[in-house]
Image 1: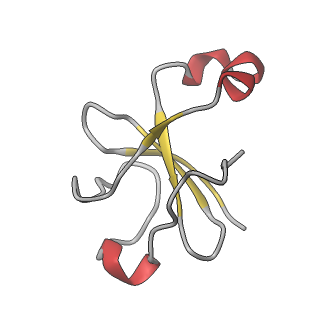
Image 2 (image 1 turned 90 degrees about the vertical axis):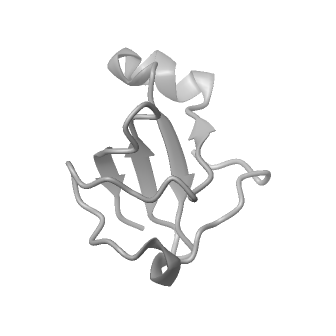
Length: 73
C-alpha cells in the first residue's frame, strides 16, 4: 500500500502506543489513502495513513489524527 514517496516515521518518535482510538501527534506527516485501497475498502475514502520504519501501516482520521486501523508488518 505504501508508495516509495511516503517517508517512513520512526516508531520511537511517535511517543504513543499505536492502537485504534489513540491520537498520533500532528507532527506526523500523513498521506491520503491510494485510490486502489479506497476501491477495495470504500469506507476508508476519507482517511489518511503513514508508515512506520518497521513497515507497520497506520490508518488515521485526518481531522482528528485518531488511529482507525493498524496493519502490523
